[in-house]
Length: 74
Image (cartoon, rainbow, N blue to C red):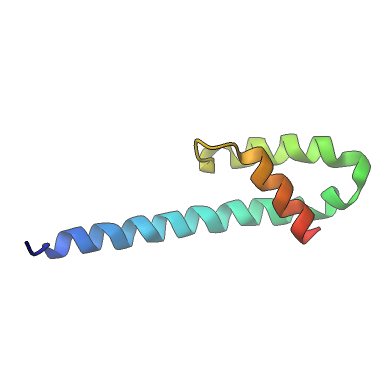
């Protein structure tokens, strides 16, 4: 069964939307990277990142992913 052009366009726009959200989420993480490097401020950094990135979160636990990102890039 052949798919119509609308199904492909829908998947492309969904992929573009996901890529845009991921880009915005990474920008939020990058903006807090310097504060993360100061070990005393790390708990506050988690709270701030979580507040700002809340709209991008997936249902899975974001805490571990954010912590891993900070350790990899910080």
